[in-house]
Amino acid sequence: MSEVDREVADLKGPAAMPRRNGELVFNQPWEGRAFGMTVALRESHPFGWESFRVRLEREIAAAGPADDGTRYYERWLAAFEQLLVDEGLVSSEELANRGDEYREGVRDEVF
Amino acid sequence: MSHEHPHEHGHAPLSDLEARALAIESLLVEKGLITSDAVDRHVYRYEHDIGPVIGARVVARAWSDPAFKDRLLADGTAAIAELGIESPDLHLEVVENQPGVHNLVVCTLCSCYPWYLLGLPPVWYKSAPYRSRAVIEPRAVLHEFGLDIPDETQVKVWDSSADLRYLVLPERPEGSEGWPEERLAALVSRDAMIGTGIVAIPEAVRP
Image 1 (cartoon, one colour):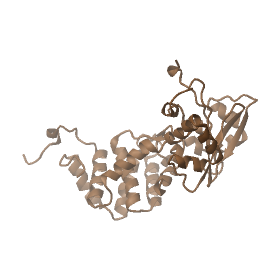
Image 2 (cartoon, each protein chain N blue to C red):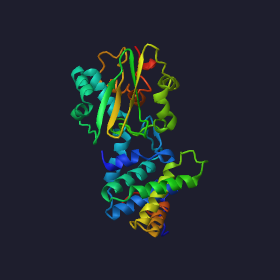
Image 3 (cartoon, chains in turn blue, brown):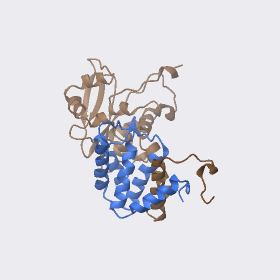
Image 4 (cartoon, each protein chain N blue to C red):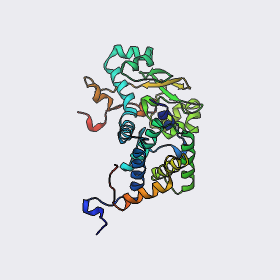
């Protein structure tokens, strides 16, 4: 068990990850990827977990009470994008351009 | 005809969210910040390894191996280490349910929890009402979980702390004699190991 496991377990309140009988629930594969990338990056390139958590909570709060939690990983993804840009690891242009390549079908796998 | 359309590859168009997740992953991999293997490994680990399954394995072993059970009750940390489970910086105490004794685990101060055995704590475990009421009126709390503890049974409440975590060893259900460990482990729920549940063989499985 690593530090990041503990940090994940300590996400509380609305920021707590959706789970069923204690186990995480990923409803779509991209949700698991978004989560796994965050944990993998935390392990290989330590960033401040606190800054991720704050961004996640801000995204969830901005979504408002109408969000019943089924779109939790959308908030996670947005928070992770912000973190990457703020930490200077990826630029927003890179994210936008690469995103377009996948949306337009120029790319369809990770390579 | 300079533009290839994804349908020609037989793929459904990606949703915006899928495209964004792929964009991040491919950029991070390209920059050498993560590997796709590491992402796979973490997703797998969280979906399969980190959950009540690990605790359930410990319980099933204790039911099957009386000598292991004795060691588990004497020194939980050392006994789970035999199964290759690390209890990071913490001491684990295992408390046994028996006829006349029911154990319940709470963390009144925050949300200390043996997450390396049970996965992420349920929302109610972290809630203020559970944390205070489990100590003040454990029988009422258990009733809300569908457990009616007879008056003659003692309810013991264990308050976790930063360096001491508790696991309830539930009573082995009647009718499970001779079952292999794997089959036993499948019966053990997270709640049974917190003490807000018991282990029973589902009706459908009974002979």
